[in-house]
Length: 251
Image 1 (tube, helix red, strand yellow):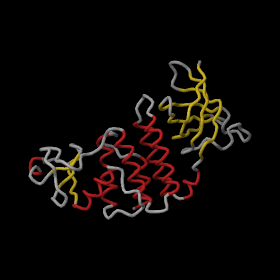
Image 2 (image 1 turned 180 degrees about the vertical axis):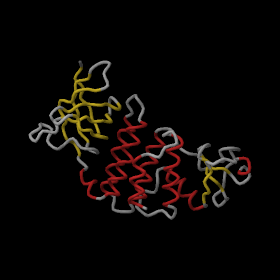
Image 3 (image 1 turned 135 degrees about the horizontal axis):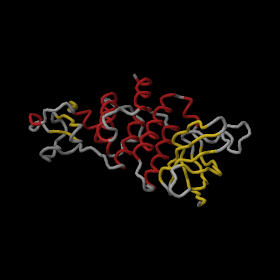
Image 4 (image 1 turned 90 degrees about the horizontal axis):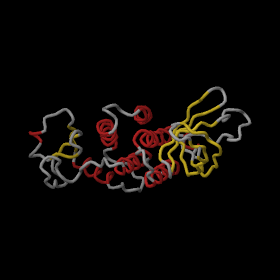
């Protein structure tokens, strides 16, 4: 049994018995980990009220070789983000980021993913501009890092560079745009019509976004496309639970 100390972000918590919690962590040095915090639900727990989603800290736990559940010894707070719960749109966006990390993070440690998640949660906590734009930008950053960047500049069938202003469609199955000449060849149910504005804004989102807090003209189109793209390429054609909650908030 090895004692491990690592930076960690709490992605999700589960009640376990009347006194304990199970935590799903994204750690900087060990990737995704599950730990049990014994006694965390007791009124005078040594963990206090620290063990909540979106919280960053230094986790020390006893790692058992060959086991998926380890025992948390200490969680030293570095950054709490409980204010995200004060506004449901911020909370829903943060839930989307953590669900993506929980479900799709690689087994091996990924320090850039860990750092990017922290930056995304901080932005949603502090954003004073358009929250939906911030959520879209930060979610695409995670998806691009995970290796699922869509092609927004060249046709995914003929590889021709597509100029801004050309009428195009987005092919969910192909993972990118389809030029006007190739559209008759792409007769499937995964096509989405994109205006020139929506295509330009998608390209900006995939490249990291503007970061200026201004609302997108095609915000609803972008949200629907992101939901369907993630479902198609990462989630076995099923929308993430966080998207359902987010759409209830945004309409």
